[in-house]
Length: 439
Image (cartoon, rainbow, N blue to C red; front, side, top):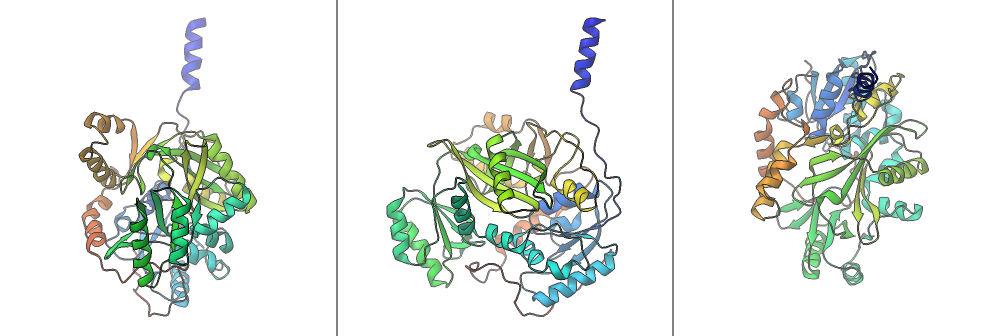
């Protein structure tokens, strides 16, 4: 019995924890959904726990708008509507939903809008949002870099040039290649082509990009030191912090592939422990009295052995479903439990858990295969142990059917110019964009 008893106790010790349940799911949630896949994951995560989830979308073609876990749909465009119209719209949504719902943003524009107008929205919503000053700082790549440097948090050398001469000075002080981003959103990489990130290899190309955006009236370019390394040198932290800046749930992981290849968002990721990244993040959040959901990216610099903060999203990140505990706890569920005054269960992060954006990773993998940066066997091995995909869910298949329409809109959708070099403003005056539709 000694050996049998030992084996039985060992089996018990590794048994998968009981799945968590949100006992009181009576408070509804309104999700301000972007076209990104984080909205789909958020709707499913809470919907599967019996929470009544309502989505606000730009149009009916958004994949998230097709989820079977939505209790109702509303349509609105925060980018073009005026502040007053958007506030009126959201108050009207709350009246239709009732029960004072939780309001959750999934994009930079909506996160800023909610934080800027929290004092007025609090009448109708429960708002787990950071203070507006913090949101503005973290949405600015230059302000984030300055804050990190002041606090001793490692970050790449960063510049926000206001003239061609300052671009030249940066080019002389660093090595190429250089990372180019926009202070807010996107920039013109070449005529008619917009990008969020570019890797520039020559001074001539760097000056061309600056001149192109300056001529368009919105340079607002961030120049950043390039840190060598593969996709797997990029680490992430996702978590939720309460009103005391205590991290109630947090996890770290690595990017395995990106979309666009080597310079974009996660297309394949793995959950892995990194104490240094976790410690740096918690240190920064305590210093700024942060509260709410958080998504942070780091890159490991093998030249000095430091993890350097690249960007910070003061909201739920599109990759948050990579970071799921063994009992099913994630950032969205931790947020819901905290805001509704319920106990957040202790949770052990699922080490080795893989998560994939199927459509994006297929393109990135094919690119790497063509460029001989990936072998077929290596690609096949990378797909082992994937526990969750963004689009293919047996209990919610409709969102995947709208992917071709989303791709066509992104590929051929009209643009009016580069993103402004100032924070997204909610002061624009324009008529109401759409009417609401409830299920």
